Length: 251
Picture 1 (cartoon, rainbow, N blue to C red):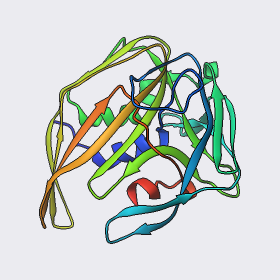
Picture 2: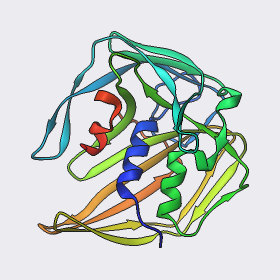
Picture 3: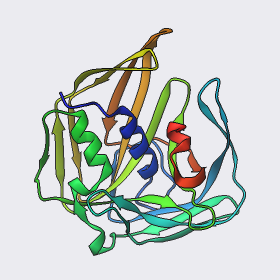
Picture 4: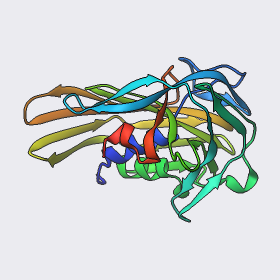
């Protein structure tokens, strides 16, 4: 089995992720096929104001400020930020954004996307059909002088979950064989368990829910179960500092 990059999955899910509906709503529990256009309207944003080191969770507060936002993703092949289009902003602590099809030059093979690389290293074998499908992804970040990230996720003492938001230029299926991977860090043995992957994205925008849950733990051992599904639960919108994944990894 390939090296199980658990922390990488967490980071990528977080910076790309949120849920949405394709008809102007604000998201909720449902299927992950979202259609050819998205609209987020006047949704409340939380911000990370501190970190609870004892419980390893963020401390959140209602955000009331204003921010412009850039929408795009980091291309892993070219090492460049790729704008995807759309318009929106945070005004008075509430986020509004609209996008139809992404910019044509923003589409890239799966190998250019961080979420693909993490799935590739998690499942062995990992297969995309058709292999020449092209994708875009949404990451929101605020420009200078703030350099914050905006995403939709939840982190507790035992659960991390976030949403990837991916455009596919055709119907495409991802399959992969899961398994168990063991890693030791700071004297703690982590056992990561992933089920087999069978995920179909529809042409258009898709929400993909990534969830990591500690299902058992002791002083020197933890068992973590990873699930990936084509769905979009109603998670908080969170503004996190410096676009450096602190909210999600506390690095």
